[in-house]
Amino acid sequence: MAEKKCPPEGLPGWMGTYGDLVTLLLCFFVLLFAFSTVDSQKYKNLIMSFKGTMGVMKGGKTISPDELLTNSRIEYKGSEYRYQYLSKKIDGELKKYSGDEYTQNRNENSSESTENQNKENQTKQTKKNLGEITNEDTNVKVTERGIEISLGDRVLFDLGKAFLRKEAKPILDIVYNNIKDIENNIIIEGNTDNLPINNKEFKSNWELSTARAIAVLRYFISKNSNIEKRMSVAGYADTRPIATNDTKEGRQKNRRVVIVILKSLDERFQEKVASENPVVSDQGGN
Image (cartoon, rainbow, N blue to C red; front, side, top):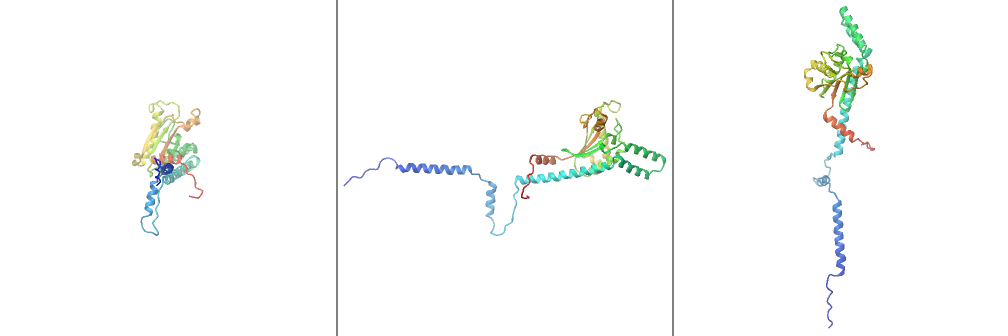
């Protein structure tokens, strides 16, 4: 009887190939898992979709960061439109009280209440003074800070003085009527030209510019004492010119009081976000 041959020592040859194949498959699936990312929100939504009964289910809305950003822009735009509207409203009312139209209206109102020659003379003097006021003496614009209402010094004060002129009160009344009911903080800024001043009242333009801002503040407070909680003043002397100080006309423009209706920090933040993330219109109309 023939003897049985003993199998060779070691594993069969095909086992090596099989082992390599299994190892490669394992590496392949490990790589697939490594490349995949698990979206936790999608996973939660998937689980929630299996809850409840079949049929019509109540819909929900997931707010993504992009949608939150878009909503913030909408709020910012609404706020910006509000500032634009208020700015144009104040500017329009101030323009009505500048130049010949202001002179005519004030003269008619004063003439109706004139009872003697002294009042008539006063009316003529008022007309003469107001005739010097033009649209260039008032300027209203929206800036990064808020609404800036610029009033030339000859609208409010005599040269080198910090006492409000009588003719200034109707102008300030227009501003007051537009700011009395808003909640924004307000800063009143005094500015001068670069011509030096040194008298008993004011040692320099710093004192003059600050005193003029305070004079406007006091007038507003006299109308409503509660408004002072939202107000502050600043004097900048000749450090913030808007025109050259080399000409008479330029110095006239630099002598001014600026009333700033400040934007809130939240509004400034929304404006910054909107500027850094411009809205791109969807062609689909969304």
